[in-house]
Image (cartoon, rainbow, N blue to C red):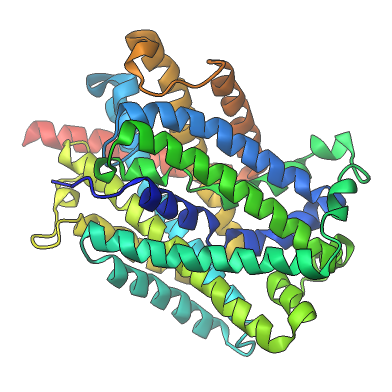
Length: 443
């Protein structure tokens, strides 16, 4: 049985390192490429959606603090003997795909920034490094949860130090806060409702994902009714402030016009490294690149830790394949689930590119997980009453409705090819679910 060993600080640390990862360093120039001078609006939109969605996660996470997060939420909301079985199975099924995609994105991002240090790496060498990163993190996770909490804190220190250095560079050497005064100078309402803005938001929201990681670890959190909501809100607000400051810092030294030109020409993707190089020289740029690689490793660590609990939780309740319910006999963690997700992530890291992975990650989650549990919360509220939830969001049901509308817009913005991939995965999940049900009845 899993043990409650993680307090507010450690759970928030694991949330934050899951959120940051390689995402903001890779997506910052992409967002500017889409929106030019309106780039900050996409980061603000991502923060708003994350905060609103965190209210839904907080109500559900505090009420059902168990390993597996959304698996439990969907099962409870739609009925364990009704649609809940199918919804929770579909969530675990898509987790088997999208969790390795998240891990692969961290590994691919790691290798892409490594090119600043080793620009002559061949494609096959880059792929080998991405795969090796997955293997390294799996080895680090192969231990007891209390030791993992300590490793998480160590990795978090590297995350904060990296972001702190970038922000300090802009404050000390650039005209950082002038960028705030210019935020409305390039504003266009047409851009705000455009497909390009949606594409930019896909990238910023990807960089915020992970604020709910504490829900996946619900069975290992102390005082979960209070610590789960607190952890999410601290994480989202803290990371949003850091992301906005980082954007302002970098564009105070390298203009958004220059970064956008790089995107058009498909050059200089290492914006943070170039930023530090202009301020402090090439040696400092190498150092910050190493620190960014550390951040990518930290994110991958948190991702595989949290998601490895999802198939395990489902299997312990008989809702997924039984082999995933096994705990390590000495170290007491779901090792089969960890090894399965890591193996798929290893394959994905060899097959895909960064842009493909980011859109795929969001498309896999939005309908079943984010929208599914938003509707599920309303069903639970109606069935059980608000008094059954230790945490209650303000202005209910307005945040839920807003979250659903915003997620639908993001789903549309992922593009037709990625949306088609979601329906293929979801459709195959439905087929496997009914085949599993039929097989179990015959046994």
